[in-house]
Image 1 (tube, rainbow, N blue to C red):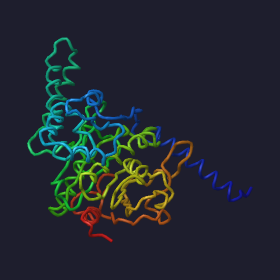
Image 2 (cartoon, rainbow, N blue to C red; image 1 turned 120 degrees about the horizontal axis):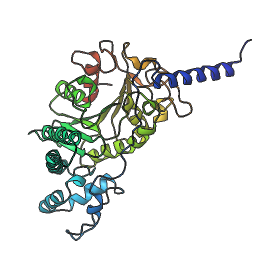
Image 3 (cartoon, helix red, strand yellow; image 1 turned 45 degrees about the vertical axis):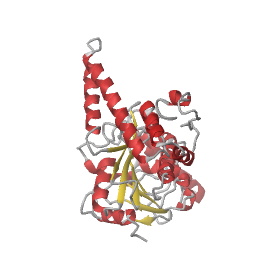
Length: 376
């Protein structure tokens, strides 16, 4: 029997969807994922911030105030009043998009010291189980690492698996800025892990910062709840939908305080977040690599003024993921296909799913040119 073209397309779509379901379920040898609850809403300490009238003014609501409004508010304050707010509400100021960069660094150091003190107290609490005390000790050591001199933490939220953003370079004076958005299995404990360095936002950010010129700053941003493993969370846009407004707000916060529009580099599932945030991102470039799709059929569907780039090396397993979007599964068209319309980034020397920022690769060279505005 000869099928009509419409039936053939429908059959191919259903087969691809079934294959996607099989793969994310783990029967193709992939890791099984665990459903995550996304962290949403304003930063911790917001309730106290909202009721604070110590400056005899209404403080901007972290949940509703735009980053440009936050920036304008802080511009009206004296240095003493700014630091007073940092001391009283470090968790809010440290995560308040549109607040001055230096204040956010200061606030997050205070928040980290406070969390470390609580973790140390929990580790010494004999009323707790040994497992709880061991977990508290590990977390206190994690906080101590983040408190090391010279680290610039621009966002820190210990809730859930933890979220964080770290800056490399002088963000306040940078002529060029880049933001790294990671994919699955990244959180407070793993964002700068030693294993698989170039698969972490910190490893990517450091590599790009070292390759670029001194006028460039790079932000490793882990501001959304990432999927764990390659289960249904990785196959759907649920976590990306929760993360997209957080990414958009973070980037808006950078430009609100005078930073140039950044190049945003989006790895793997992070590209799904970037695709959903694209229309709200004040970015010069949107670079996706190792991407399963952006929930868009073409660059035009992203509704962005940014230049859109895509990279995938031949050994990246993500190429085996069907580019479908059906019944909530899959992330749509392949961004490296000619029909999508993205500018292609060479990646012949990159290896695997996490090798794009490795030194000596053509992809890193191309990323560096994009970061410093040298690509056309």
